[in-house]
Image (cartoon, one colour):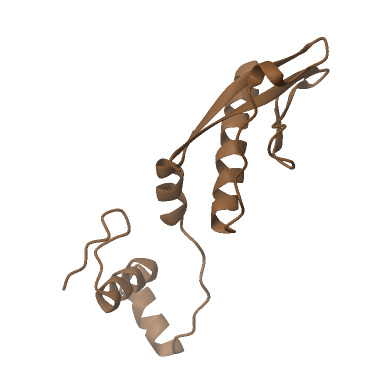
Length: 140
């Protein structure tokens, strides 16, 4: 699914707001103020759902907000996660790889101010026959 909307419970406390998602145990965040808490809730929801997708976990149906009872000083609001943007961002996220090359090659590359990461990326794309992830076009 590309778009999820889940109810979030915002609870005011002395440090700001705590946010939980009743349908997603473990998806918890907080913010110093209401705006910060909302943005953090959106991030938390997106990352939590992305992790569930990656783990092939069953994603539960969201509860109806009117069926969620809350205490005084607490309220429920809906948070949206549009997953294509998150999937794209996560797929293109830089990760650190450890590799081994001969010292003489490393020294020469450093002398020539070579961008090792860019060269490795280009070589991998060439070897795999792809341009980039976003359009997944093959060179073949």
